[in-house]
Length: 151
Image 1 (cartoon, rainbow, N blue to C red):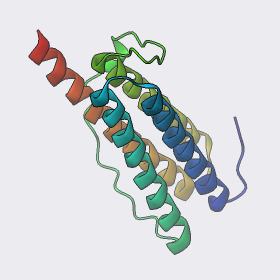
Image 2: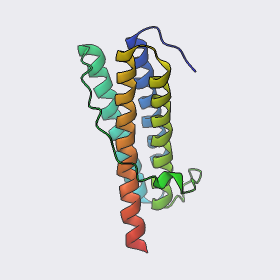
Image 3: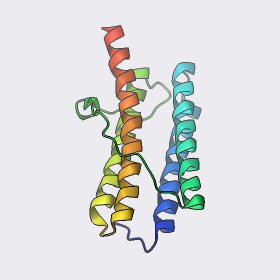
Image 4: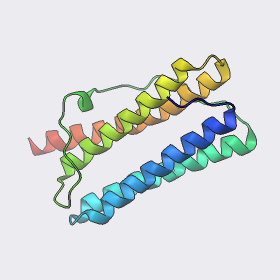
């Protein structure tokens, strides 16, 4: 796992991760034939842009007062199978893909928080993990509502 020498390096890493998520969702949107799914992925990309901007603001202002309240985990992503991105991706599969992506980001930030010996850095990673868990919850709720509506 990558090691960091400063908080700025951590924030740069996090912003790069968010940019990768923006690129991922934008690319998926470009490949979709279904307008609803294309718009969903573009919305996901915009959320990641906002997250990256928030991290940039933290870096510039050196304000690390981040919320750390717990977020409910519906664990839906633990029990659904992810499909590979394709132009024919269904709405449900798109949501599963997004849940898995956010879960991976959550795990990354959680692991980084556990590996650092610096309490301040650990809190930053925990806050980043919390943000990813919020995104995942949103997609899980949408999936739950979509699946319930269909069934």
